[in-house]
Amino acid sequence: MKRLILFVCSMCICSLAFTNAANPLHKFYFSNSTILFNPRSQATEWTIKLFADDLEWTIQRASGKKISFKDQQQAELKNVLADYLLRNVSLKMDGNPYTGSFVGFEMENDLVVCYLEFPWHPNVHELIVSNTLLISEFPDQKNIVQVTHNGSTQTLLLDRQNTQSSVYY
Image 1: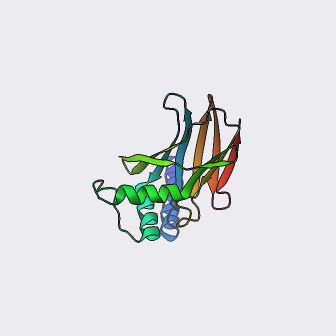
Image 2 (image 1 turned 90 degrees about the vertical axis):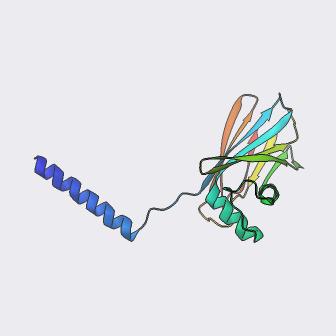
Image 3 (image 1 turned 60 degrees about the horizontal axis):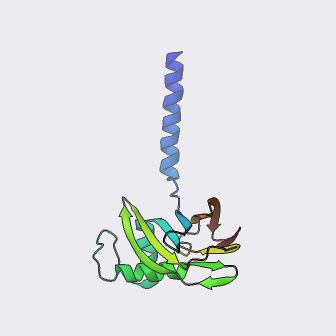
């Protein structure tokens, strides 16, 4: 019985090895972000987490400028990143578009954590979230957005076919 189990396990491992050699594992493309209506700071805060290598690739293709998040002191890095983010995310509150401002970014291992702020509107009834980050370069890109307002959190899944969605309060 032990030999049979060992044989079956060996065959499964070999099968996976050959399958992976012919079809390498697919890389997943996604971002995770949160939008928080923060009464203490009187701001609508949007935090976005993206994989550094995917973001570097996309910004370089879009702007033609070579950037690296390993060199955070790079003079153009903040400006190029802010421009890319603010061209690819937006908010409408009760039908009115609002312009965000880039607050900054930091690195968490291989993730770039970006911070944006939008105007404060505590009595929003409809929030329209648009997010096209990385979609131009990665057709399978998924952008997950969690929106928290008055203690209630709603999750949106945005992708190439659905780049914006609404949240109602």
